[in-house]
Amino acid sequence: MISRTLRAATAALALCLPFAAHAELPQGAKAPAFSAQGALAGKAFGFSLAQALKKGPVVLYFYPKAFTQGCTLEAHAFAEANDDFRKAGATVIGMSNDDIEALKKFSVEDCRNKFAVASASPAVIKAYDVDLKKPDGTSTGLTKRTSYVISKAGKIVLVHADMNYRDHVKMTLEAVQKLQRAR
Image (cartoon, rainbow, N blue to C red; front, side, top):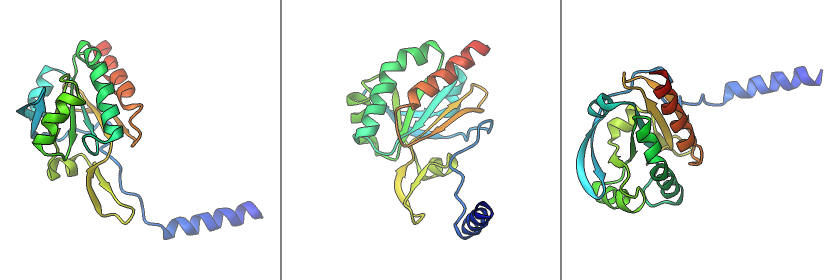
């Protein structure tokens, strides 16, 4: 009796709550093409996903804000693992809505000149569904911490969305190594 009442109350409550928005693009989807202003080793350059995919898989990781604690630690971890990503044939690119001057500095100090970062435009943020929202649903102006591994064919093979930075490098590296073994 209690469990039936509890199930009925839970079902009624679920109908009253707003449905959660889809958190990210699904695995198997075609990655939206984009170009962006980026920085590597303190120098500005133009990044094109299509051009990067010609070389191999791409690890596209979104982070909320340069020089914040979690984003700095995540950038350090990607920098430390960059040689392993390269051995697996992958390009790493970090993205946030930071301006190019902040990205130039971040690419040197926290990315340690090992990989590029780029500015995520509102169109890219929307295309990859990484707009970090407040509880009321309004945008914070930041991006969610979401990592995508995109195959050379442009398909998303891994999605990891977690505001905790700790598993992003491990999971994306495993995915690109798996792609390398499948060749």
